[in-house]
Image (cartoon, rainbow over the protein chains, first blue to last red):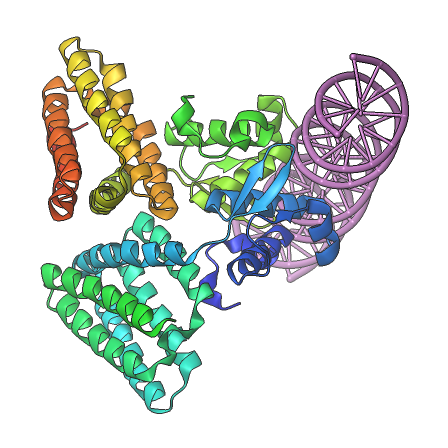
Length: 221
Length: 221
DNA sequence: ACTTGGATAATTGTATACAATCATACAAGA
DNA sequence: TCTTGTATGATTGTATACAATTATCCAAGT
């Protein structure tokens, strides 16, 4: 579990938080069949904990839409479909645009330098063909812009969606040709933000995600 | 609590669900000061329940970002600010656009007729100056389009945001001049959807929310 | 006066116990 | 054979008990 994947302090320390993360991952990577019942007792004994943290985790997952709880009946898996992923990308394409726009007004010099450092490092790892690091840096890049938008609402929803798709398809950037183009797109986005060209930043960030969708669908990833 | 305000089955029946709704409303309408500590015991005795449902509700609220839980320390209110509301409107303006676009492909004849019925009814209540009904119909209109987008992801996030701002400012459409314009905008949106003019539908739905922001800020609501 | 240490109280975290609800199976009757 | 009722077991809902952690207070020492 990478550090940037948790947005609740309690995730690190509390049992409930860990159970939540665990179940979320398990659902997203498909360890549960869709509509499968998630019995509190079974999960609890499997994980070696009591029912209490399991219940709390299940109720959190319900809020995220990953499980459906029918009162007095139980919790049932609501995995995300291929269409859900596609939808999320489209939604992200718009919101990343807004994020880049707002970053124009709020991004600090340090944050900008950090972005450029990420781009530089990414170039290196593309050369070395280090898929793992490329994905990691891509996450950092996007989340840095989320933060720079200075909107906790936008940051919250984008981080959620980003993690959502991230977990399902880690393989996105293992096409090194696409990774190269992607990093190039990152470059011009940062340039637009540095020049405080909000319209351009929004358009470029939007197109960037659209490109990502395109490269997915054409390659069947 | 109107029927369209709950998107979890469990809300109706379980104690946890009711406590969740109650605390959420209380936070949004400002019954708790920002950063105020929400002690499990206090809330439990206040509501006449045990700590268990309160804990589960608090953890759900944490996921929504309405409270911040510090492990072994407690839960603290994270109320939404005026800026948060503004941000939500901007985000909605984009996503309502997407929603209208997708509705072009998926909306059934019945759903379209329902939309037109809502518009017709709204005209009536504007004449009668029934603010309550106007707000209610406005919600129905938007949520019908969310549903018609045939995207559970988009529906989920838009419904959340819509409820968010709804609860904070019920007064939005009590300006009858604005309500008139709003309904006019609804009319042309439906027309665009009926004609399956996706670009136009998106643009109009987007502008519609922008107008809403504008009427808020200029009137200081 | 200020800090530090430790006892005590308050609060959260987790587990368990009990109550309420629902699913299943099976038998009785039409 | 099909329905229906009922008993039984399984599962969830809620409350409570206990453990772990943290906050508070006060006294002792510098």
